[in-house]
Length: 402
Ligand SMILES: *Cc1c(COP(=O)(O)O)cnc(C)c1O
Image 1 (tube, rainbow, N blue to C red):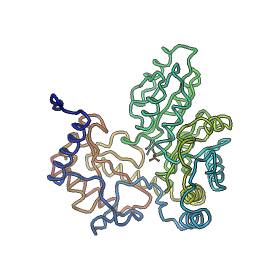
Image 2: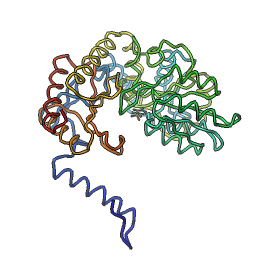
Image 3: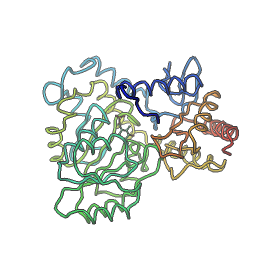
């Protein structure tokens, strides 16, 4: 990378570098980001008048536009308006916020819950509110950026362990001084690789070393477990996660994040997380939509079944075609390509054939593991999945991957 020249302002230089890169990508028709969609419905997205099959959505259970969720949100808009003008602690708490939190607590079989207006802000605010300067936080190397940033903001001593490597974590916990506060924080389902954390071993280690365990279920709610209740249901475990974090923006078609846990933890968070105290409340229509979405997941468990069938069909079909999908066993399926250029080309070829899939490149993923990240949902039919796989196969052959 070129260094800033003498007399250059590094801030201006940084802005210019980014702009040059984006201009270059656009000139080569290899820029895929921020495309305005005219419609996002079910398994499709319409861009520039073209209705494309959507393989870049987190709407795992196809809940966007669900009549019950839609109605609840409209009713909340009519009753409370579009926002609260305030933070939860002061004048921003409505009946809907309380009901949402009760619903989440029930769904996660916890004593209590608290909802925040962003999932990113939840991790940032909660991790930094829990930890002090002398504490230690143990974070998986592939954890989501919001966890990484929360750890950094906390000023605690950060120990990164190898991805899903429980032996490495055990060594690092064993080396830590006995008396310091320890938090272990992980994604349940990793957002780039689609693999699942080894929760049983993680719980055993946290008990042994007296560490508090926080699990981010952004891609686990509605996805894992027979009825979509998440990673504990997946492993058939009743207890052992101290802090259940999740978002209201992936399976749940709204915005926001939450923590579920013991009542004392939730009271502490409501009075200490800066993203809660100094940031406005969830808009009532979002709170109502989120609450109703949890109820729909419970009322329509067949959606989870369809999703799981689609996931199996997609992953096994890609593997049969010769693709490397790493250890994914969830709707997030990496199709490993290797270098940036071919990943970009494959995305371009796929989009030209109306399959909306996006490339993920370094530094979002380790160098040499650039990929298409394809997300399958309950909204896809098996025929649509088959068609998409055929397009990926053709694209893979065109770039010399297969
Ligand atoms: C998306 C995501 C978040 C952030 O959630 P938002 O609601 O989009 O802010 C946090 N953690 C993980 C693992 C995520 O994938």
